[in-house]
Image (tube, rainbow, N blue to C red; front, top):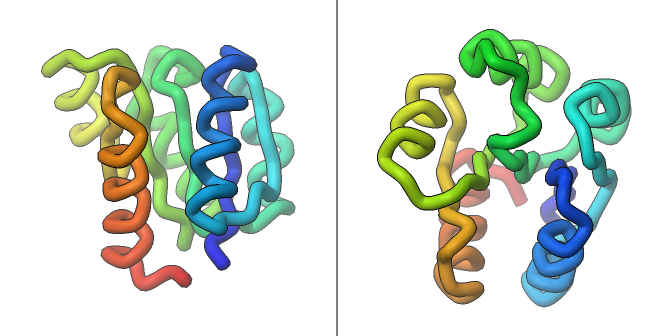
Length: 123
C-alpha cells in the first residue's frame, strides 16, 4: 500500500484528496496545512508519496524541494497548483516528480498518482 503525506493549506482540498486516496487504497500517514508542519512531520512518517500544494512552498522553490527530498529521499513528490505554464514549469525546474493541476478531473488525478508511484518503483 502506498503511504501518502498530504500538504495543502485548504481543508476542502485536503478532504477531496483524502477521499480520492482512500478510493485508490492509499494510506494517509500525515497531513499539513503549512510548510513548517510539513517539514516537522514528513520525515518521521516516511511516506512513499508527498502531495504538495505549490502554495505552501517558500520562495526558493528549488531549495525547498531539495530540503524536502533530504527528509524523504525515496518519496515521490507531486506538486499541485492552479493550471498554468508558470507553475508547471517551476515545479519541473524545482525537481518534483509530477504535477497536477487543481482543475483536473478526479480520474485524471488518479491516473497521475498511479503513474508517479509506478515510475518510482514504490508499492
